[in-house]
Image (cartoon, rainbow, N blue to C red; front, side, top):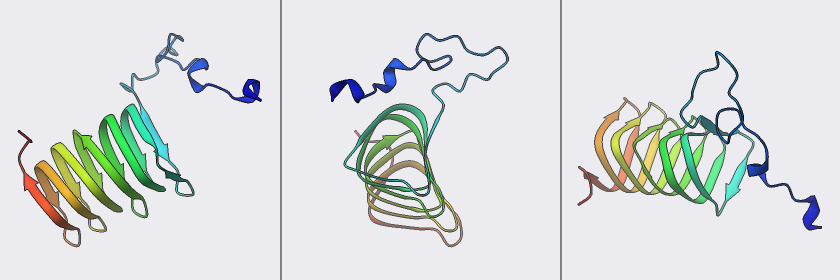
Length: 137
């Protein structure tokens, strides 16, 4: 039944959709959205969050207006993204543009069509595929 479906936009979220923010609580500027280790999401569009922390699996996903993408050790991101910064300790693959810094940790693997402004790769981290430095034209 349609009445059984809840629209998450109908819930008041402190500081985000008109609900008062608790006094003394920090302004997270959009906050952190976390995909837990046991979660698997396929074929989704994720948008309008400041930081997306992926500890589970995102497959065939498109990111829109996400500033920071973090792929934790054991996490998996597969899809397309344009983000300001990206930190990878797990595995990321697809068409990825990082306008700022792409940081690959010791256990991080990045492959696909990758464009970045700056890059940092820890010993043990890897990047492969079509790789371009600098912003897109």
